[in-house]
Image (tube, rainbow, N blue to C red; front, side, top):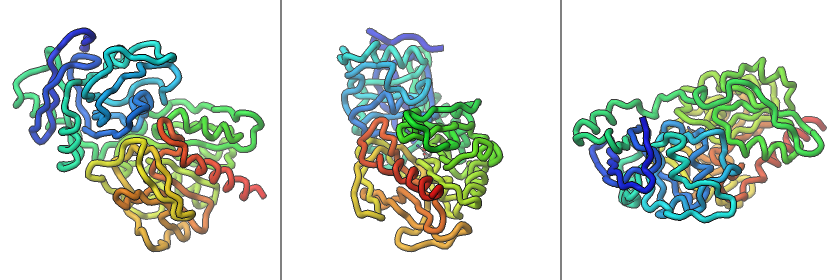
Length: 379
Ligand SMILES: NC(=O)CC[C@H](N)C(=O)O
């Protein structure tokens, strides 16, 4: 049960699994919620963050101190609902102002039953998560507030993100088509593991008709649409659990169909090639992350949302069952693998978000690279 917090000062408490506690006020819905505590360094684009299915079962802490300033509109969501399981802000906007806004952020959180907390020292919380790593958390407000020990026990009883298989919980159940904008040049099968709305749109803008398929799609389903290329999307959970999509991708590699993957899709390509994946201490989330494209040497500022990464050698070409592969992109903050490229197959992927919703458009060229692979295949 959740109720409204607007205009009230309902106390709320945030309890981390290691026993650290932050007190604040209810924001959005009143009640209790759990998830993995992660922080986002985005200064803007909170609607896109909240509605990114990759945030399923995560409680997002905003490092930007003011959140909600531009309210909520109907144009910016990346999916049909808010997916974060909880939301932590320091100082919510009291009066949002934007010509597109139709309601406030706390109204929208409440409408969708998302429990949040405000008035928290998000800088201290973020530093804690950086030092100790992402961990389970609970937010409790209203009647859900009890003794700290009881709340801590509830948090510690929650499932971990490691080992979580979540794509099927967020992906479409039915296949659907996003038509090409203008002249149709290519057909792409896009396996939806938690796809953001902007991704098929970026392809459609380039003359691609996108057949979005459920996470459980088989290789047969993929080839039934006679694709010129195959795409694997972003998505929540631990890539180590995604055996089904890995097997489908291996079939795509076997058939040498042009292939592009984003985020979870990059981790699946890593696994399809025989590399491992591992959990980062606190992940990359935000729209200001520097990445180098090692094929051109150019640095791009990019949007990220990942807690896992591919374990591949940075400075060697690897021999894989599908030919030679190399790390094409690297994060300049910490040298994490941010992209993979095959040298003997038309296939590549990135760990970050070229669809840029929200985020800078520096990486838009990757959609053009995908188009080039399909053009080369046709020539
Ligand atoms: N945005 C994504 O696709 C995230 C992939 C994966 N769930 C991770 O946390 O790393």
